[in-house]
Structures are given as C-alpha cells and as structure tokens.
Length: 174
Length: 100
Image (cartoon, rainbow over all chains, first blue to last red; front, side):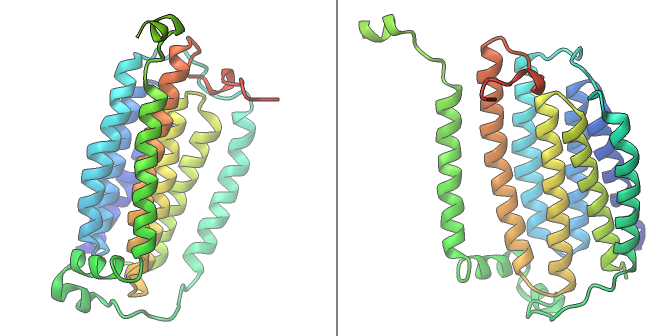
C-alpha cells in the first residue's frame, strides 16, 4: 500500500516539475509548482515527517507560492519572451545521458551508515513535532537564532527594495 | 518497504529538472521557481536519509531550507519588481547592468 502511494507521489511530482519548466504561461507554471509542492509534502508523510508536511503545506504552498502568483498577476507578464535558450538542444542530450548514469549509480548503491537515536518507534511516542522541537531548541538553538536574524533581514530588505522611491523635490518639501 | 535509493532517485530527477529549468528558461520568475524545485529535491533527500538512518538532524536542516527558500523568494521577487519598474523586461538576458 505504501508503495502505491510512493509511486503516485513520485510520478506526479516529477511530472509537475517537468510541467513547471516546460509550460509557456507563467501562471500555469506557478500552478504546476503548487502540484509539485503538495505531492512532495505527501512524500514527507510517507517518511514519518508530519511536522515537515504541515510546514511544507503552510509555508511553501500557502505563503511562498501565493507570493509568486501575486507578483505574476501584478506584473501581468506576457508570454512573448524568448522561450528556449539558443543552445538548449545541444545541452539536452548530455544532460539526459548524465542523469541516466547518475540514476543507475543511485539505484545500485546500498546507502548504509551509523544509526542515530531517533527511530520511528521513538518518534511516535510523542510525535514528530515534539522530537523536532526538543532537538532544535537544544542542539540547534544558535542556528535557529541565525535563521531568525536572516528572515528579519530578508523582510526588511524586501521592503526597502520594493518601496517606491521619492523624487528629490518632494523630499525637500517635507 | 520502499528502498532509500528510490527516494534518492526521485530527488535526483527533480534536481535535474530544476537545473534544466534554470539553464533553459529566460523568464526571471520561472528561473526562481526552478530554484524552488531544486530546494525541494534537496529537502526530499534530507528527510529520506533522516528517516532511514533514524536521526533527527535531516529534518532540522530541511526546516532551515524552507526558511531560506522563503527569504530567497521575498528578496528575488522584490528585485523583480524594482527591475520591472525601470521598464526592463523580466528576461534574464537583458538584465546586464552589473556586468563588466
């Protein structure tokens, strides 16, 4: 049963990713990106990361994608931009061959390593959000604070960049 | 039981799709969307390894990636609005003001 869900989420997310890159209308690209994000969040559920599923749906699909669509609607982009780079056909064949070789190596490799202490049974006692919270606010507190400062800087920078600049005359008047 | 390499393969295909999008698309917003695809591929990888190696660190870093994607989207879209206000199109080939 889990394999059916995995196949569905994987196939739909890959198809949606290709559509995001290939479609001409930017709004349709945004909607394909929405499908991709939702199905990637489904993969998170299969991996027992329920908290990341919620964060992915709320932050990615709810905030970031709405921001993209808002800017797309605001700029009212035409689709007459040059669609493909001139050298794109020459890049395609080496990319496909390289990716096929990479996939061949990935499927063959065993991927082992030392196990940590957060087994599935240990996480399910108190839930995924509890496990992430305990870890983040003990071992990763400094990184958490750095991310907070980074987000504050990003918000202030975005506001400063997008503010309408006043002309010099109106600045002298006030 | 789904093998770990299946998740890694999905992530590799998604990353290659995003990279292809950055290389072949000329619309700035679509290029940013392709970057989001690549960030999602990295997140799948981290969460899959976190689940199969039974460690929590991967999910923490995945949360940080989502926060950085939010900051990147805000700054990138603000830059698009500034550039578009100067009547330059969103074609990345025409944004060469800082090129020397």
